[in-house]
Image (cartoon, rainbow, N blue to C red; front, side):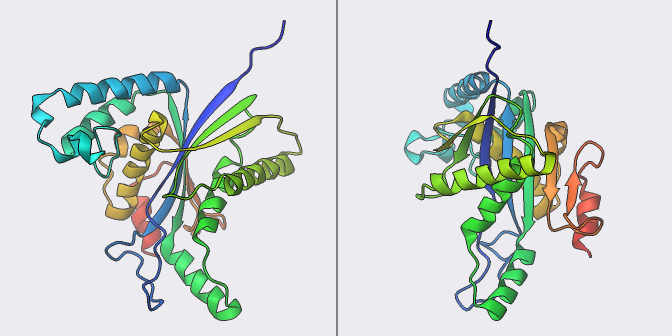
Length: 274
């Protein structure tokens, strides 16, 4: 009798932007319209079908609730909350309902974070020395490789839904980044990974898991950008690893937050005061 095929489902999204310079080449990180950090998040969801049903049920309930009928984002023609949950766009009352729901999902979250100020300074130095311009997609692809390094060997079939970035479809580049992550794992542990990997760029309105990772990223982003952990704390035990790659106070590869080293605002304040 053949063994049961094991599946693993990952959902990938980003938070922050890749705006570093103004038209004159001046660094504008942290100014209006340019976030301080760029983050990539992966949600491993045990039962994506159940998550889809739960979110769709919640949305249907909210859409028929008279309390919310005049909220602009709830109007179907606006194409926001009426078709997909998105933490940045959702009304605070709606956001609260979503956060209450998603904290009970069977989920593990992994996040990689870059300080845009560090990237910008390094990019300026590279341009002066080598004439090489910053490639924004390279930042994203590097984080894909880093975050998936230890996530691609635990099932027979790995299904990865990745939120589309604007109008661009970059399947080949994403496949290369994922393949590199697999190679890095095999090189480190001297074992072969035989997982079959399926990558699918999607819109969050099409895949509920992308709406979930958006919310989990937004909660961490609030910690980093606004020193606000009220949304993060109820979800804290779902974050299995948060890699702050530019906080090198203690280790050259950055600070890794996990159960043994939980993320707190005090630690973040200490990191950014150095």
